Amino acid sequence: QVQLVESGGGLVQPGDSLRLSCAASGNIFSSRPMGWSRQAPGKERELVASITGVSSTADYADSVKGRFTISRDNAKNTVYLQMNNLKPEDTAVYYCWYAYTRAYWGQGTQVTVSS
Image 1 (spheres, one colour):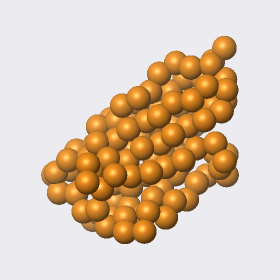
Image 2 (cartoon, one colour):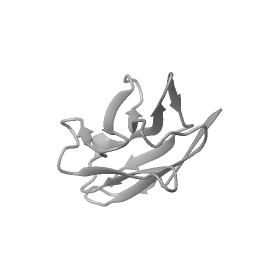
Image 3 (tube, rainbow, N blue to C red):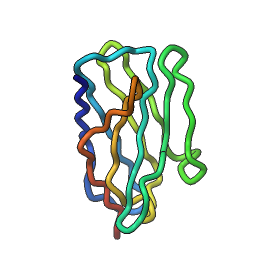
Image 4 (cartoon, helix red, strand yellow):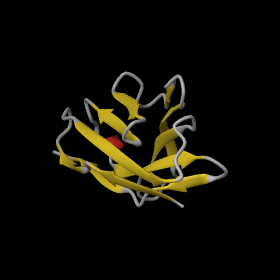
């Protein structure tokens, strides 16, 4: 079994920063990719960022490039999402995921960007 627990969401103002964390437990292989997706009200879930296992190569949605940074600590089975210069359009529930035989998802953490 795989469990993913996100933390770090909250209410911030435009231009602020947040760091999300996702702690994975269970049958986790550090060679497998992990990442973050988000879903805003009335919209489909979209991929925000992903990171490979061995080389930690990152990839980002165009909408967050230059503002968000994904990283992982394989010793702690934890993936992070550093979000800088947040915008109102970043408001969404953010979900952590881990890919192995299928995708495993966390329960989500709310990020609200509003003045």
